[in-house]
Amino acid sequence: MRKNAVVVRELRVVRGGRPVIDGLDLDVPAGSVVGLMGPSGSGKTTLMRALVGVQDRVTGTVEVLGSPAGSPALRRKVGYMTQDASVYTDLTVVQNLRYFAALAGRRDAAEAVATAVDTVDLGGHQKQRVGTLSGGERSRVSLAAALVGGPELLVLDEPTVGLDPVLRRDLWAVFRRLAAEGRTLLVSSHVMDEAVQCDRLVLMRDGALVADTTPDELLADTGAPDAERAFLALIDAAGPTPGAGPAPGAGPTERTAR
Image 1 (cartoon, helix red, strand yellow):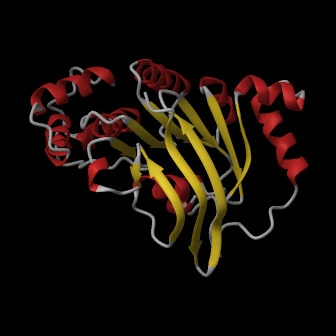
Image 2 (cartoon, rainbow, N blue to C red):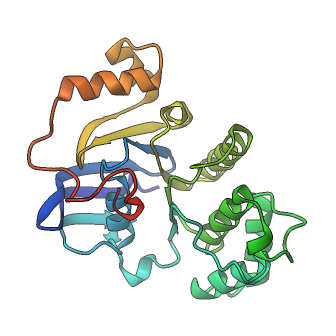
């Protein structure tokens, strides 16, 4: 089994003439759930886009499953769930998943669709148009679309944002099951109570790595009673990050540039 699913060295991303990530190094262990945590504008989405090969103005080394990020060989091996549900609202759940299965080149499309539907617990909604589903159900369809290709690595950008606690709990149960099957998940969030669900934590601020640790180590090293206060303690200790930061205009409302 591959030791690291993702290896990043000296990653630099420039936007608006300024570096939003500057010299970042990161390893993502295979077969684990890694939480990419940090406030809005910290560079989480930019990093994820670099990993799946859709971010421009990238320099450095970004290796995913042994190949350069964005390589055609990774098309079936990497699943990407964006912040906003990337599915077609005028199609049914099954029609969406058949389409994404075809894009991934699945010859066993019917079986792949059925497995994805079962994994995200969308049974009974297969023939329903996505536009008529609730927000939580649409998130599940988007996750199923990322799963239907049978990826080894799942890159999930704030998959639980806006969901109620029950739906968040259920999705994290799905993530744990996928990791138990041997898949690797990189899950971004700015909700620090989700940190305890992860095997490892990557904490970012202003496009820089603040910590790469485990939930237990984070609490032990800071002496904080919970993950949120531990993260704040690390932020306060780190101080301003020179040379990196969101581009002009970036912030909590610029969802595609976080």
